[in-house]
Length: 226
Image 1: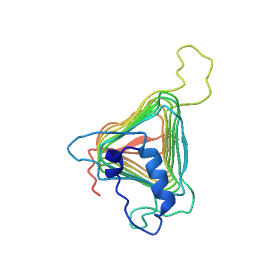
Image 2: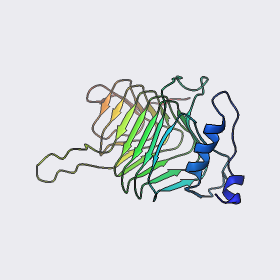
Image 3: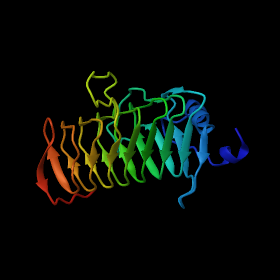
């Protein structure tokens, strides 16, 4: 790894961080292309208990602070479950600001897939993202624990016009409650809230509350704050 890249890797000290965390962070960071969106690179941290499955040709673009699998009891539901970061050939992870991802989380990027995460995004413990095509998460969004986001059905249904994978876009300032499932082809408009336990299989307008299986609009023109 070049001295330039190492100089931009800051290790934040807490009880979970030691030599294994440093080595795993450095390993992922060696595959990172530094970006510049005015925020600079303030931190890049992968917890030492994280399982890494990284193919040779991957691309990580970090334009902010990336904490993955870190136990932050004041922010997240803590767990001893190990985290997983998998990136297959030609996959791309884009970090556009401060991103905190809790312990026990799982991110899987399949071949040629792109996952883009905005600024001031928190993803709680044991949440899972399965990206086969394209998933985008907007700024200032909160994703609670045990949420599953996947843009693919994995197995193909034999019928005309069927697409096994479709992009997902989560807008700015969206709150996803615990144990929500978000399926392929969904857009969630900015300012919206998805209630706990919902299954989102169709797009959601801006500034509304949705709930249920499948999720339906319960209230329009809502406002929510952190």
